[in-house]
Image (cartoon, rainbow, N blue to C red; front, side, top):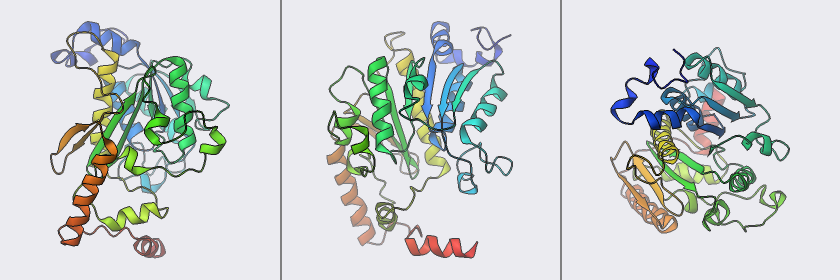
Length: 309
């Protein structure tokens, strides 16, 4: 029986936690994911497993060995291959009838309209390394009147929010970008972590934060990606089933949710910058007291390991 049918055996264990009407809504949902290098890959596969049939996937990057620690699509057989293409294959392994369009150039001004033209739900998994991409996606989602979900992992934890297309709390306001700033001016701006990371784990090594501020890639581990993808899929379910079956409302900016599998901390804040500096102060104190584990992520550490290879 096809996975487009609510009676499909693949959905039989879902019904302990949602009903057939909701399963039909999941099947009918069309999801666009910008970035499948970590969180996006995992949450996309989870969405396929719960029944999402239609995907638009954008990612210009290739899998490399450094992705293997957290992305199931990164294997010795896929190194050097485009991430979106590999994701496409993995989804078809789950559901051969899935409709997956891929954009191997990533999201660009030339294709953003096509990328979002059939989406009912959008995930921005660009990791905020290119703020102009986030702004492009946010503006497209507002034009289409669809939710724009942002989820990121940090350590063993993750944070999540979403942008209501009719709210004054836009992506630009959230990130401290002038609302009508041209994309060319946004390009190259540094992400303000105090705006998008309201939670910082107390076990964090501040040398890691310094390295990232100096241009090092964001470190990422499998448990944090798992938490992020679980949060992302669960919030997607809330968006998909909004107003039905006595479900809780999804989280909307300026509220941001966080969950840490290591410390078992979780919560929601509507003051992300205040929360960021509160957690940063705690992390600084733990580092000064020597109670935070060392992480070996300084520029010197990374250079030494690269030289050893």
